[in-house]
Length: 366
Image (cartoon, rainbow, N blue to C red; front, side, top):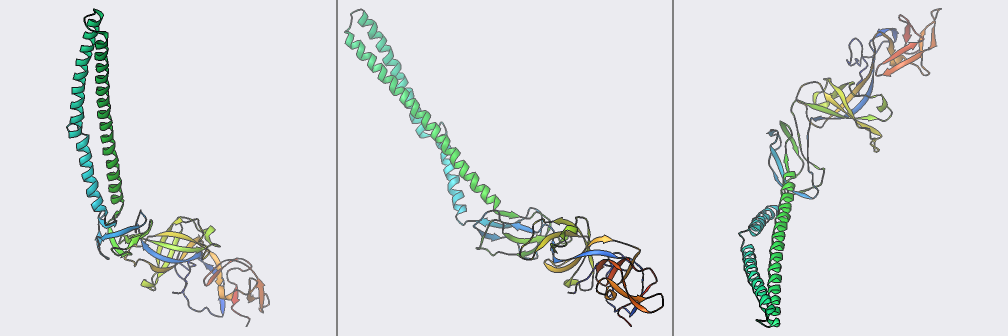
């Protein structure tokens, strides 16, 4: 593809003819526009379907290349083959933990019943100890017997409290078990949800980068999807020109897939990080023309920096070294005259001073 320029004659953004200029040219006013050259690719809008977790296998690709998809539709499922079995095991463990944590579980019932019996025994032994303490005070029974009854009552109380503690500890352990398994199950389900990749748009699958059984890293694009009617340009602009590029500027571009046709876009984003390998900055532009472009097709573009009208201009081929031109002097002889050149892009150069409309310039000395 040949480079083209947004330096235009009689029409903003129109490309200049490549026809060879005559040996002599009469200076006149033209519509001249300044542009920055860029190259890159054309891409569909909202296209990346990305893996969020590193080291996950592609378990299932649910769509085919070229297939139309709807927003929310499942495109691929990632994870580990053992996760289904893990989900089943954790589900069973959670059900069992909840059964054990209920008041009707066998262990809970056993400890609660033993605690009830221990309380009844303590109440009985306490009453006996009180009775024998009174009898001992009346000298009706030996003091040692009353002491033995008191010791028995204390032992019954200790047994009752111990069973209460065991019951409460069991209930706490059972509840903690339910909570622990619930957390594991929730985390595994969350991971499964993250690994179920869905479409964020109504559009089309343009490409599938991974096959089932392969492993993807975090941030890897699994599929290339996009809309069929909204596209963007991903352009590279030289670091010497990036300062002049601003969001909202017009872009005129060509692509080999539609040779000879010119399309338009608008600068939408400038990534402020230089790419060291080519000393360029990435610029995105939203395509304003409608049509079915081919994703990842190469493009060459001009970003319109400045629009002018009624500007004196000469063919760039007529400009001599040192910003001078061959022109007719007052006596009619051809002389070299110094001039002040402005915008230079493509086949035309702006004249800021040194020439006036109607002056005749020559490509070379006659």
